[in-house]
Length: 95
Image 1 (cartoon, rainbow, N blue to C red):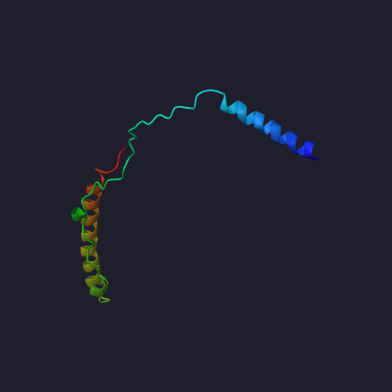
Image 2: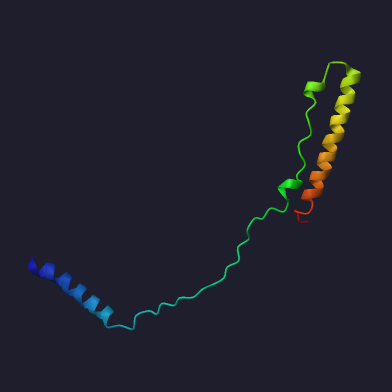
């Protein structure tokens, strides 16, 4: 039994001795590399974003002629806000 246990240990010792007498250790090189990473940047100033127009729900009375006038005014305000928002974001998109 002793011979079986010593045989693997002897082979391991020769293997390790062969590695130690081999070549010089590897050279560690330290260097600094510049890597450019895209970063998201806001292209619109939050102060320029149009405010949400007032809602018309509380102004509706049930009278069709009156409500049509109220809804027309709300539509004009919404279209103006949309035009301003589209003008703001058109500079942020690439084609």
